[in-house]
Image 1 (cartoon, rainbow, N blue to C red):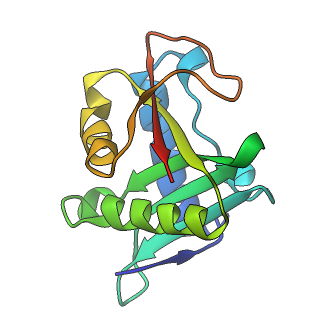
Image 2 (cartoon, rainbow, N blue to C red; image 1 turned 90 degrees about the horizontal axis):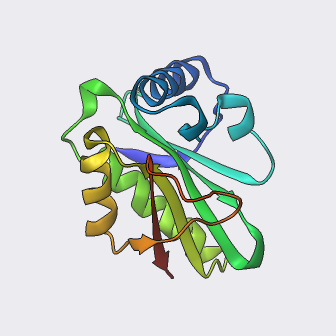
Length: 152
């Protein structure tokens, strides 16, 4: 598996991100869906990475969005259905943490849902040292959201 910067506008990535957005909209009320679309992930303040196998097949993705004061937000973590259980999300998250450290970020933050659908993701983040925190960067207290942070 290779995790590296990629273009969120590539057709296979777009398809994975649209699947991600559809799940978010199915699982959370509209006002609580904070996932970014491919165009937003192509912005200059976002580092977008994908995991691909040796044949170039897309396995998963994730992004870092720059925030003020030396923080960055983890966005759009998604593993393709066929690749689940193979360590893809852990590899993508490890790459995002490494990128954030190399950029001198002081803290990684993220928002995820509070519904049971998101429990596996929260366990992944907790295994990597993320701890509960409060809303940040314009988010507000929301019963459908959980906020996590990792000091770097």
